[in-house]
Length: 104
Image 1 (tube, rainbow, N blue to C red):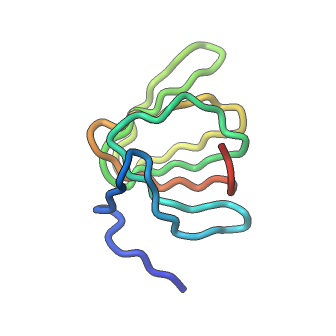
Image 2 (image 1 turned 90 degrees about the vertical axis):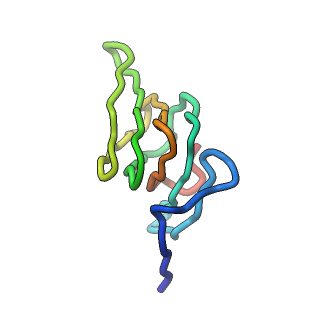
């Protein structure tokens, strides 16, 4: 059994740096710290995204255009295969991400 303390204060050396919590049936579970946006991308596997601390504006595109949903601490979203999206933190944020190991 592994224990990870104080994830709400975790800070990485660079934006989107992470600490791995473990792996569940081929999916990685990690906490990311960031103060900068990621890049627009489409995952090759499903992704669960939970804001642990901070605020994140999740931008996503669908057939009707581009949208933004504000996620506060405790909010979550799920990106399925093919969902184009990018996360923009508002200040610092810590985010729990569960995705297929090696997913891009």
